[in-house]
Image 1 (cartoon, rainbow, N blue to C red):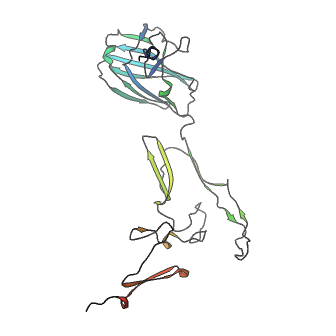
Image 2 (image 1 turned 90 degrees about the vertical axis):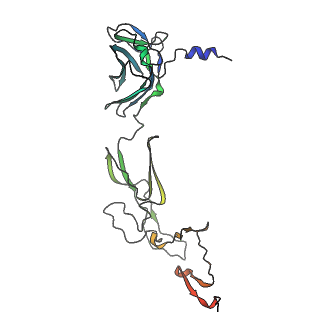
Image 3 (image 1 turned 180 degrees about the vertical axis):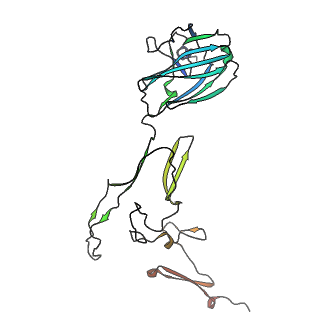
Length: 306
């Protein structure tokens, strides 16, 4: 069943533009040569990114301020107010450009990606500068979802810090009692390594660390995974260049070189164990107290063929 209301609401749709309401803020260039109703296949898409140093509210608008034709050259001029200052940017084409033509404009304030369509429709327009309007005579502005202000949504600088270690005030305790050494929590304390890093910053994978980059999503992921990056540390990692560490781990646990993770590519079972079975000519002896396994040849149980 046809929906007349949908048709009526979208018959003058000018994506990526829209027609502003009557009385909305907007203006025409001084001394323009008249109003021009833009056909919706001249400008197919527009993506505007406003750099993070500027304030921009979604209540603001980016107006298609003028349409200029000079011979075969046509120019779309847009105007926007950012950080209290009026700024204009242009999209320039030739009427002979065929569908589809795209371009990118960028400066210190703004980045614009524009796609134009069938421009031969503008060939019949007389030379001059016009005030673009919609089908109801209202000013034209860029659809809000095509505008991306980065203020508060982007990383402008990086600080690096490590959380201070939790230290024991008294490292001595009696294992036969319930007494445990008192501790000093360092939660919230940070050892700052660098502040306000800007420009090109290179992220290098450290111990048990992974770095992932998705250009399509504009996403940088810092994660942790056992053995990733520089592998597992074989000792405690200093938090500062001045921190002197003793060999081994502060927890007293084994270093990475003291632990067997796989045997010929076979990993441990769900309980963290390997199952080693002797066969004819081989026997397996375990010494748990010494953390040792001995595998030796034993021909006494082998079947000897004569």
